[in-house]
Image (cartoon, rainbow, N blue to C red; front, side, top):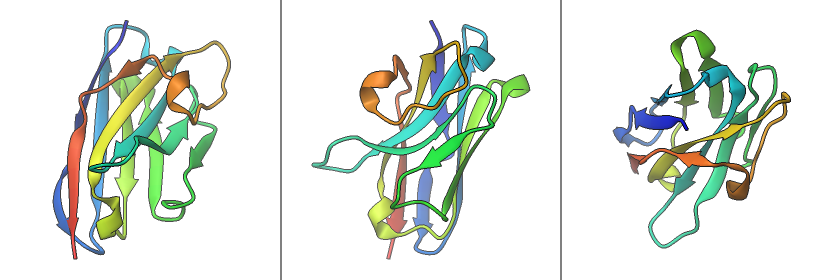
Length: 126
């Protein structure tokens, strides 16, 4: 089992930047593919970004492509989400997710992930 703790959320003006971090503990971090999801009030939790075990493969949702970047530091057991040019529509609780896998693929759907963090609030003001 792996435990995930997100940090780095907060209040930012439109056009600003934030970097979210997700620290993992409990198991060998490099055995897990990782993802970021978000949930706005009254909406379903949606995919944001994903990264493979090695970090060689990444994918981003169309709504954040070109603005958000996912990365990981396996030596630090941490995955990051760099968010630039934030928009009010990015306001949501952001969740980190992990899935144990043997290959180097990525996962973009909620059902593919086993472990979830508690979330961190991101609020973008206009």
